[in-house]
Image 1: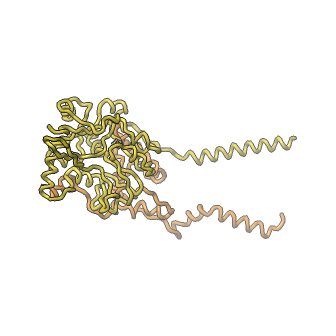
Image 2: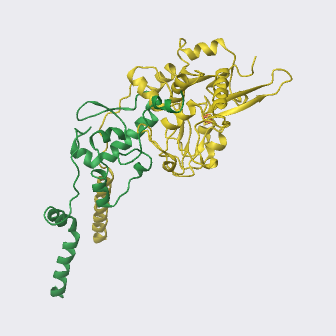
Image 3: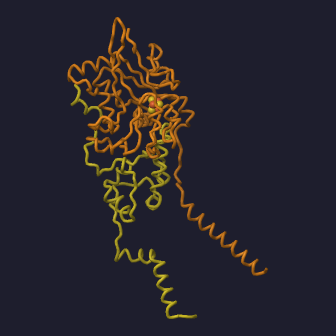
Amino acid sequence: MKSGGINMMSRRRFLILAGAATAGAILTPQISAKTQFVESPEEVESNRRWAMAVDVDKCTECMEELIAKTGDEKVKPPCVVACDKENNVPEFEEKRFDPQWMRIAKLKLEKPVNAKEFYIPLMCNHCENPPCVQVCLTKASFKRPDGIVEIDMHRCIGCRYCMIACPYGARSFNFRDPREGLKEVNPNVQMRTEGVVEKCTFCVHRIDDAIAKGEEPIPACVEACHKYGKGALVFGNLKDPNSEISKILRENIVVQLRANLGTDPHVFYTKLGGE
Amino acid sequence: MYHKQYVIPLILIFLAGFFTPYWYNAMAESFGYVPEMKKPAGECVENKDWMAANHMLLLQQWRTQAIRHGAEGGRIYHSSTTGLEYHASTNTCWECHESKEEFCDQCHDYVGIHPECWDCHYTPSIEKPHYQGTDTLSKFFS
Ligand code: SF4
């Protein structure tokens, strides 16, 4: 009995020592830096909500001019070229492998009188209730408090549920190493790798930079549209009643794409439908 | 003790093997190979020794801050060594460490690990022209 007791003691001591050693090995020095942010998520939410407005008339005008000049139905307008270059979006010959953040769609309004053709840009709408975020298995897709829907590429496992969930076809999958399709690199935006999903981010790096500097942010497509196009795109903060976009939304009849689905997309089309 | 002539040498051989890392490191300076890293052009965001041990933790924190909390000002990093503010991005590293081969790869290759950061993130060894902003698009559009 006695020896049994001694054995129990030593076993317990052994376990304590083993536990302490394991804890010591696991609890390596943790990061000591302070994480203090400028604003709380609630403050951001009440201060900023990014959105875009598209003047379909101007957009159509720009596209028709470009097509007339180049004779190419599939010509890329300034906004798309700027987006591709800014965000390191690769270009592949084979269209089914070619990721696209922004593209131009041609719509036909079929009416007996005043039949018309439109061109509108399509991109991620940064929905208020994004279905892509709801279905994401790994929480790689998420919505920031300022309304931008972003993908954390480090967590994306490439399951492509979000591509099926998105009603706008805004997301693309990287079937190939994107570097093969890049002629120029923008060091400020990370490239992607084979097997992740990507989409428009409203040029989130530009927005965060501008906010930190106290400037007005402007995505690459909007900048290019105003420089080389007709100025059809307007980007801004919906929470600011004096911003240009708030005025546009107040003074125009705006159309959201597939608004019946309840996603509340935040790319607004004005003058869609003609008259 | 039985079989002293076998047991004691074997114990010694075992101990020599067991403490390989210690004597190997002690001798490495004079005999072996020590990774040699290029001196960076500036001061690091944190203390050098702390960085040597914890740079991956720091990068992980930057990643979470910049992506998940970008809207709240997460792209700004407050150094606890210098108290200065830095942009939480791998490009901040490249401002001082001009070469991946002569800095990162030295140790990583030596210990045989291959971080996947550079599958996507920019490094100075990418030999492609840099995009210079929307102004350069004037060659496509007038
Ligand atoms: S447009 Fe598609 S990808 Fe963008 S937030 Fe809405 S559902 Fe998600």
